[in-house]
Amino acid sequence: MWKIWISIIATCWVTSAAAQGWSNDRIAEMLVRELSPTGAMESGQWFVSNEKLTPGVHGLGVIYAHIPGSAGSVSIHVGLFSWTGAGWEKRLDVAGVFGLAPKDAAFFQTHVEISTLTLGPNEPRCCPTVIARWSIDYARGQAVRVP
Image (cartoon, rainbow, N blue to C red; front, side, top):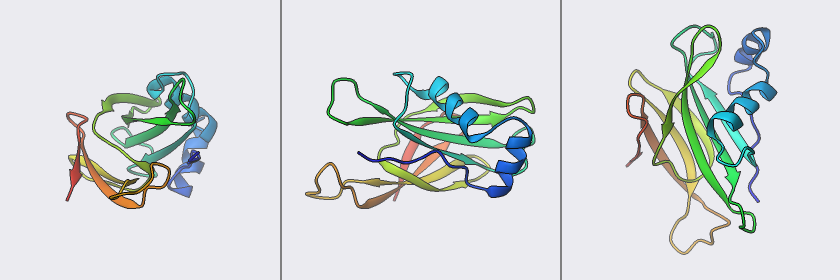
């Protein structure tokens, strides 16, 4: 089973977040509460647009939840968050992202881009190797694959 552990992208951000009470454990709890359909997650990833937590900073959470009754299959759940000054607030659930091992988040004025691993032709479901790049619109929460 794929395991992608909760991690914070910028080391400086960890220090800033921890000083404001947002440890990795607290972020993981928030992601489970806000994104998980089962109340648990197998793995997750957290990305932020800026290491300085000021109002308007964007966060992108990606979690994988076990599909009940399956033999180790997971579903992906993605959310857009904003830093309010008092904490992180979920703005939108994101639709249309597929794949495993999210990485390389890049935040822009109107959208965030992220890469995942997806299946190539004739690949077994266990072992995706094709990198897919997704663009997620902040206003609608819709992801589209970038060619």
